[in-house]
Length: 417
Image (tube, rainbow, N blue to C red):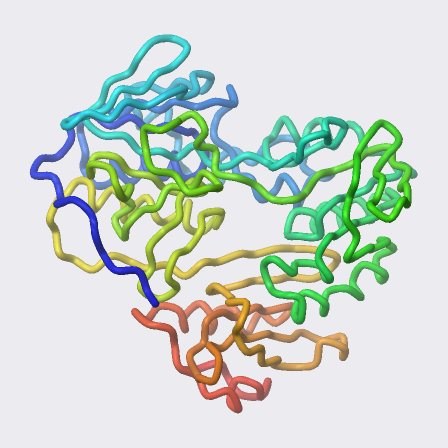
């Protein structure tokens, strides 16, 4: 069942000042959206990494062939230093106090008060306890360290065959690194795509000289490498923990209601549920309410790029009844010689329909249907660019698109609702 709108009534005034906690893509686009909407109030940005905003996807996709960050000022044409009144790139938010008519953000260099706050502090890579010897890949500093550590002939063990793990495995293998990938699930990308579709990517590893071990639990990571639960030891010069990310919201403490993983539930206007409407959140920190898909977790690049426009529209025009965009979750990945795009949100119980033959060596598409219906929940394209635009268009309607399964399974027919 789709979420039911709820929460406090909209505010009656436009904030005269906005504090943006974070300096990544979602924060950058929030500042840009404020100014594009004609907002003339005070905007202050609080970053944590000490460098200008940059794009994160190239960190894994171009780990070894792009040695400098993809600065957002170049990539999306937004320079927050020119748009915000104050930009502090090395002054992370440490705490938040919410007042009836504003907020106070605690930092190491004193408190900042504002009429509204946008939490856009992103996510951090998850490193299990006891894995201190493992590298992670989420920041430009992480990428620099990993790049410096990897040399041809080195042994790299990647723990996790998700999006990041698969991307790094392919990049490293092409650079003559000896790569082993360990995955606890029965197939790569099982968490995102389910084991049935994830298993279709398994042959790619062998084709690129990558050793893949699935259904194997890691017991320990130390200076020698990785020890599996069955007693096997995988010697490694470098270990990469690619076991997911968590919303970077620990700094909020108990000031806002958070999910067990730290996420903030937000409505269609990105107002934090359970908080006054001058408290907003966007990007990786959110669990967004969607009429079409239910609750959508953050972590989608396209959302960080475009959702701030919806946030700002709702923040600056309180009480407006205009329909807000309900963007479908979107993931793109280049891994082991293949181009993948995922639109929508697969469900564990959904029926899977394949379009094309994955074993034929050509492009193919997987479609997830709500059980026993023709309601389409998600589409994955693999090396099939003609289906990408069609899949994107399918998820622009208010509800899940309806597409007859027999038509969808025929690769000679266009994807059309």
